[in-house]
Amino acid sequence: LTRTRVWSEKRKKALKARWFSGLSHPDHGGINGLAWWDAYFAYVAQCPHLTGNNDREWKADLEWLINEANLIKVIEGKYAK
Image (tube, rainbow, N blue to C red; front, top):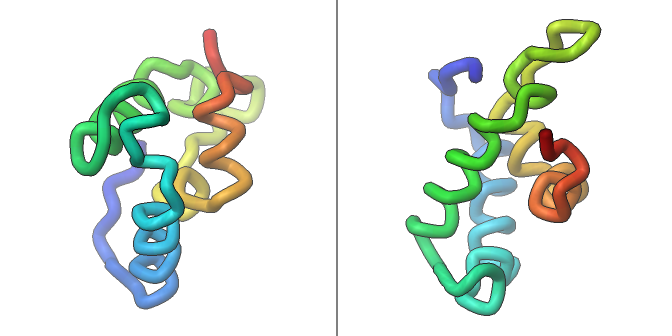
């Protein structure tokens, strides 16, 4: 994925909102906090569609991945192999 180089206020706010949304709570997969995010991004790295293996060669970026609607799609398996 594209490396994030700038932590804008918009990105900080979006990540903070997702962090405190409860998605990284143990009820969601039995892990929480940084371990949940580590598992999330490891999962994303294994999804061909999200890493550019698609008809448009589009890749997900941080803003896309932490957007609430997109994050839910990812964790619900919409982009699974």
